[in-house]
Amino acid sequence: MFVNIKRHDNWTQKDYFAYKALSNSDLKMMQDDPFLLKLSKEGKLNRPVNDAMILGSAFDDFVLSPHLFEKNWQVVEDGEAPTTDNQRKFVELILAGLDPDEAIAEAYKKPTMSGTAMYEMFKNFISLSAGGGKISRTMMTTIETMFHNLQEHEVAMRLIADSEHQVCFTGIHEETGVEVKGMLDMLHPDLELD
Image 1 (cartoon, rainbow, N blue to C red):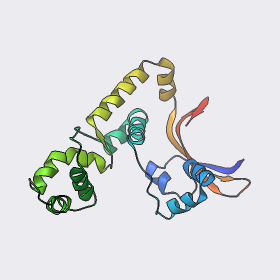
Image 2 (image 1 turned 90 degrees about the vertical axis):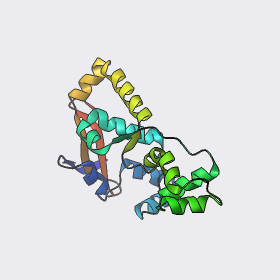
Image 3 (image 1 turned 180 degrees about the vertical axis):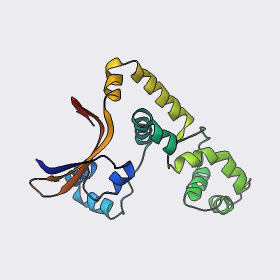
Image 4 (image 1 turned 60 degrees about the vertical axis):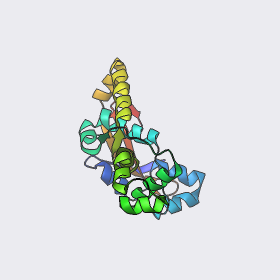
C-alpha cells in the first residue's frame, strides 16, 4: 500500500505540519469533499477549532510531551462571557483587531462605559477566544482529572512509558504516487496507537 516509507526522528510538530504532503486529515477531507481540500491547501478554508479539539491537543501534550505543554500552553482564568448582542459584537471587533475605544463606538450607539473598561470585563474571555495555546482554568482542571484517572490504569501508563511519542513518517501511496505523512502519537515496540 505504501512504499519508500521514511521515519523523521528529528522533526518537530512544526516541521510535520509545514511538510507538503497529504495527512490523514487531508485524505479524509479529499474523500468527503475534494473542493474543501483544495481550499484548505490554498489557505482559504478556516477550520473551526472547538473546545474539544483544544482540550485534546492540550491533553496530548500534557501526557506525551510535558515539555511542549509547558512551552505551548498558558492557563487563563475563566472569564465572564459576553451575553448581549452588543457585548458579542464588541468582543468580535476586538478579536478582529480594533482597539477597545473603536470597538465600543462601533458596537454601541450610546456606550455607558469606556472601551477599556469593557475590555477589562471580558479580557480573559477574549484571551481564550483568541486561541494560540490558551486554555481556561476549568479546562486545566479537566486535563488534570483525566490524567489522574489515566495514572490509575497500570497498563496504559506502562504503554505510555515504554513508547516513543510523536513519531513522524512519510511515504508514497503505491497506487496513486501521492506523498503522504503521518504522526503517530505513540509508537510502542509491540503496538502502534494513533
